[in-house]
Amino acid sequence: MDEARNEMRKEDLIFGLDIGASKINLFVGMVDGASVRVLECGDFPLTNADEFDHVVETLKNAAQSIESTVGVDVHDVYVGIAGKHVSSFNYRGLITLPTGEVRSQDIETVKDQASTIPESAGQIIHVFPGEYTLDDQPGIRNPKGLNGRRLGVEVQVVTSRPNAIQNLDKCVKSAGLHTVEFVLEPLAAAYAVLTEDEKELGVALIDIGAGSADVAVFVGESVRYTVSLDLAGNSITSDISKCLQVPISLSKAEEIKKKYGTCKINNLIEDETFPVPGVGDRGDVQCSRKLLARVITARVAEIFKMLSDDLQKHKIDGLINGGIVLTGGCCALEGIDEIAEKVFHKPVRIGLPKFFSGIQEAFRKPSYATGIGLLHYAARKQRENRRNETGKQITVSVKKGLQWIKDLVQTYF
Image 1 (cartoon, rainbow, N blue to C red):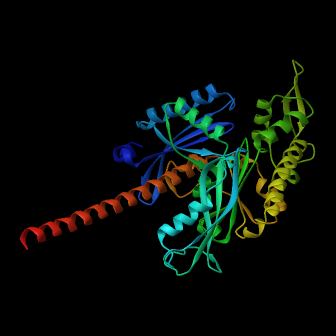
Image 2: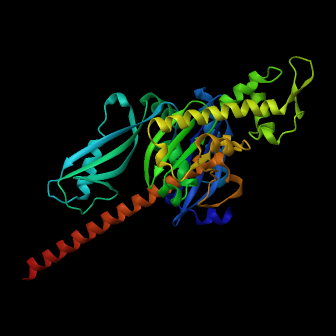
Image 3: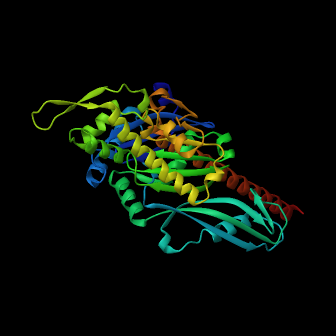
């Protein structure tokens, strides 16, 4: 850490904030050439994610933890966003090419036309262009420089209810931080866990945390579909609290899920039990671990079935030739990938964060994929901004050079 601190420059620092239903992860990293170096994470549990003041106070603690440990000021953060308030829509744009050749400005124009959406659709978070059409030719990934008369594109527009964004931004500001950009959480996680081969073939990333199961389908570098389901880890915990031989609190059910939960029912001995505190002073009650596994597996299978049905309904399942990648806190449940394979009838793997250096093993878990992915997203944005700035500087330098030559000619000739 001391070596990293000595090498740190303020302009190289990046911050990713993942506010989940059960935790806050505030990551700080550095842009290290083409990769990301993770420096530290403020990792704090949320006992009540619906209480504004509690979330703000926890976020302040996470920021203070980063500042005291790493010795940097936390300010500009990339913030993950997900949940039922997030929606996605397909829109199509079509323009007539004024010069008969596709220019960069024509590509931007047709994308802008396609992403002109009604106000009722919500506030735009991302616009993902798919493949282009040129006259009667479909399936063009980059039409720049081609000749034609009409250029079309279909885009995936991801929006959120304005009040949800405002409340999230208010929370960040109240903690003394500034939101650079809101980033769809499964998009961020994809930067940390997906391979180029998977994206090229077509892959669905399912980020299943405590509050929601969020899906993004990638084909190449394009996001073709997104959806969010308000059933996830908290739903499993609620089932456990109601379905065991003795009623228990949600906090105790969460503890039992983490300690004894599994989706591998067949691996359990028939009479294997675990202790559950009885109500009042009645002492411990022995509960069946096989019953616990059945409760968990039933809810997990239902979540995956609802997502599978949605992908089929929107005719997206045929694009997923590279399989399913699971990430998020619920991936800690042993055998969850096997349940997914049975439901989706596709190869499934657990997505662990990679493509980064620094404190590796501590954060190589699916629950940290979004936070680390936000750093990758921020690093990519930073590199793009630097390229644009360099391009502008070169343009200015060329203009100055041409003006100098012009002035010289006018003076002496």
